[in-house]
Length: 194
Image 1 (tube, one colour):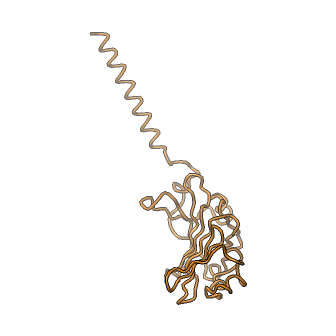
Image 2: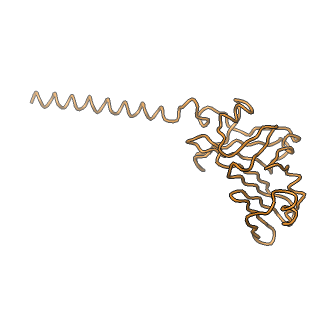
Image 3: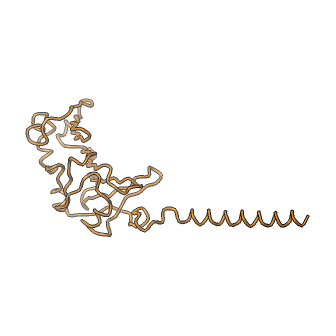
């Protein structure tokens, strides 16, 4: 009986220590001091309208892109050359594919509605700083500021993003999405709401 009590007490102590260790490890999950999800303030990075309008997508501003009005010949001649494919999506939308990258236009209102950059071949330039798919969050902090704000909504998905916008514009945006494990840029998205 004495052996049973000793074994029972020893087993209880071991289980208590295992539970405490597991709880301690769980509370440290995600508390990495280099994890932007844990360290960065949430929100949009507001820049001036002039700076926003000077952002370039593989060498061209939104004004220059919109000047093509989504016309296939104009896009080829004035922007990025011959696309991999062109897709008509309904009566009012045309999407140009350039490998993994694409540019979508609303052909009724003659403006770009979406630009998606998914490879490092195309660059984004914001405030004279070059950004590419594969860059790290740390490199963006060094280019802009350590106070760079992020958008992270875990209920929607694990990715987080850095967004740039200007005060007077609630309809357009620029989002730079990061892989939450590597903290490297996965894709860059420009969008407008019709």
